[in-house]
Amino acid sequence: MSSPCKRYNCTQCCMETEMPLSNDDVKRIEKLGFDRNHFVINNDGWLQLRNLNERCVFNDGKKCTIYDSRPEGCKFYPVIYDESEKCATLDEDCPHRDEFKISDADLEALASLVAKLNSERKQRK
Ligand code: SF4
Image (cartoon, rainbow, N blue to C red):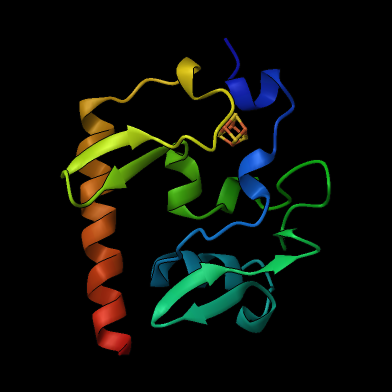
């Protein structure tokens, strides 16, 4: 069965994104030929996807144009990590979150991604 994103032709999570980027995400996207200034903003040490016209710079109005190389956080979404509770949860902003499941593998991989993002931010500050 296709993902809810495809089934509903949804790109809601590309709107006004605050998706964090790891150094690996930035390098992978740069290899596609994009200058980092085109798609990265630095928000108090966090690297995040840039918005253009209130949506992710890589969303062309219909879809993600770098889908196969999209940031790790985009691959997990709507599963997000709640640092205070140390658990994975489904983001309330996703209109179809009830159709997603959180696996143990998601929890482990997300915790590791969050640790990496925190460590990279510390090195930037
Ligand atoms: S994750 Fe949720 S908000 Fe994002 S495209 Fe899929 S259904 Fe839409």
